[in-house]
Length: 84
Image (tube, rainbow, N blue to C red; front, side, top):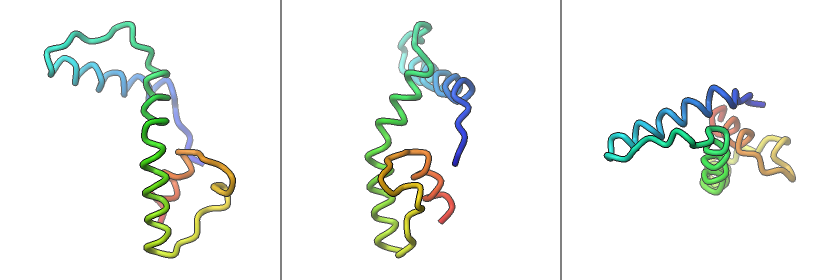
C-alpha cells in the first residue's frame, strides 16, 4: 500500500495553497492546519477516484485489487490506477 508522509505532504500542500492565495492577492493563512487541509483534499477527491476506477475497470476489464473489496481507500485506488 502507498505510504503517505503526512507531515511532509501536508506541508507541501499548505505551501501550494498559500502560493495560490498570494497569487490571487489574498493573505496566506498562517493558522491553517496542514494535516486537516490534506485530509480535506483526500476526502474531496475520493468520489472522483471511485468514478475513475469504475470507468477504468469497465473499459479494460482489469480486475480491482483484493484490497478494494469492501473498503473505500483513496490510497488503494490511486495505486491501482497507477499500476494498471
